[in-house]
Image (cartoon, rainbow over all chains, first blue to last red; front, top):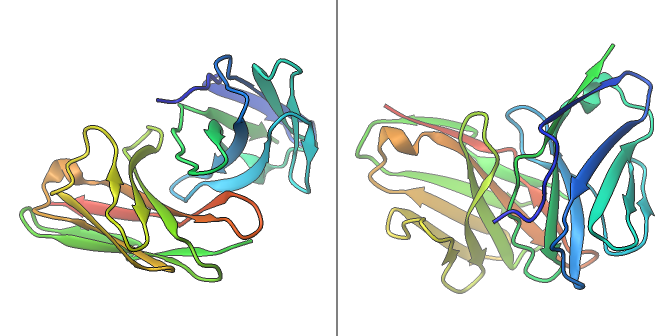
Length: 110
Length: 116
């Protein structure tokens, strides 16, 4: 079963930062937080993942709270192409079974 | 990034027939691949974990005799939907686990199965 809770939908103005929250209050010490997104009728695309520290790559930043019970994915300058369903997944690094939750449907508005 | 392909992208079959879907990792070797199913407006549901050279591990509630998985090489896993029925119509997505750099799953583009 999915171990994450996300808001079902969010809107963001084009060019602004999109902040997508995720709650994972039952996360264990050796579990990672992964973020993927799925554009309609395509396979999910990897965005970023982290364990304890905040992470940043060319796509996004991941902020994990100190108690690791929640995290936020930040898309710094949202574009229309960022409209997608965003999934936050908690999993152990080895094995990597992904149990997807319902995700957040992000709509970027012109 | 790493590339995972699926074939076919779309397939329509008649009720009672079997359909095979291929999943290939094109630029890395994957000892582990995963198969998911996604119904319209729903999330992805993990069906099974496919390990090269061994039997697949199925999630609870997934019929192993209906969804046959073969992972015969480090770059290919196949899912065969046997005796397909209209309720098997769905979007089937595979992923391959890349472990040589980081533990990341790379997903294929999906296969749309319609059973008439």
